[in-house]
Length: 576
Ligand SMILES: CC(=O)N[C@H]1[C@@H](OP(=O)(O)O)O[C@H](CO)[C@@H](O)[C@@H]1O
Ligand SMILES: [Mg+2]
Image (cartoon, rainbow, N blue to C red; front, side, top):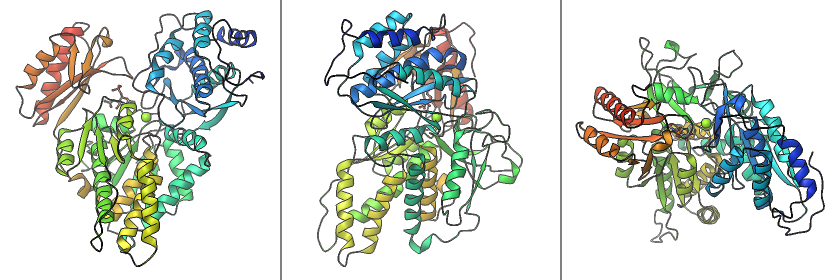
């Protein structure tokens, strides 16, 4: 428990004024968490990740960072202990800002410095430069974790870090999906009900609302109802089962496999990352699932993809990835908006709603072309939800997805205010009921789809409601456009930070000469596109290639991986 201290409002602590009580509290805890020798944690695409035994000092220090951020913002902050799709022996940490989004990027260098402070004295010096207190109210840091066995001990380290900052309190919110924690932090700071039950209730109510608004009641289509979900042996499967208990699924038969209770290993041969990258049937799925709608969550349930098992005789799947999920959401939202905005009695509409679609360079080129053909504005950002989310928030409706299934739809406050008012206006008087329904549907979407971060559970519910609304099978959805064949490889190099990229990671700036070599290789292929970038979650360089045939995409990826190896590699370095 933190020590209580009466503080005067607006007190700023400088190195010389950090009071003795705070200093000695920090000294007593910091000495228990030395930085392991040779360990250089780095704040990557989504926080810190490493082999779990290396992480107690990082988690303790991120506990401190969460507390400092809560004091600075005078808001609830979240800390999620997870390594998402990484192997079970890894763990990691993501920090959730007051809005429910990822830690503000201008705090990332501080996070790096804290995590790498070599001694307790250096750590205390860094803290004393950042610590700020305003007011006497204690600030809360919510700590959630996924199902990894290293979670409980890392939770204790995190709580000690939070408790080492006077004025901050750790609240253990237990085992959660990453997006549940983001949702709770956002709700806490909006002064709305923020318990896990409230999350489930909001999702189930908005889902039911969308289902009730389906013209003709969303009547059954042969073979339509069954959805089988692969829970990656992680936290998402169990949570989906809780939701299923609460939800009137309107005839949707939901089966969840790989919940982790059957002895399977987290992310091993299962889960969204495996399915999307390997394009093979996950463990627990097979010939009994041919033609059925299937979905996979990742280890912390912040991403999802759909897939079909096309034949009994092969372990290959037909992937319906984040790009297609984005396309489905975009079609539905665009359609509802155009119903809502249509002129009635010669009267126009008074709101110019800007829709934006945000992707990364990993988006399949066919999806980008398709979205542009729909008349949508498409922009690319660097990899990582922090970049996509920031860009999407600049629109009235910003739809963002990474190809791997991480994304959501953001609605701006001004647009939601307008929509609420429009809905009120349409509900009074003899208006077109379809226009009112369109307003209600968009409002329901804004409540169903997580406004804080990509969320597999809420995303799956939105997909299910839209497919039912459109009366589309997964096959119809998958046929929206045909993906260009693509290939991803990882290359182990001596120092991945030697690669510096520009233009949303599509061009290598350093080392010099490498981009020219990639260009020359890519030019040999019809519809060739290829880029490399350092991963922010693994110690590898990623290579992505697209071409008009799978063989060509494979060859292009291999050639460029060899180039990366030549410029940066271990010499005959490993590829996978
Ligand atoms: C190609 C790819 O799938 N990259 C993933 C992966 O990041 P890397 O920086 O590529 O390791 O993990 C991120 C966090 O989950 C996710 O946002 C991102 O899309
Ligand atoms: Mg994840």
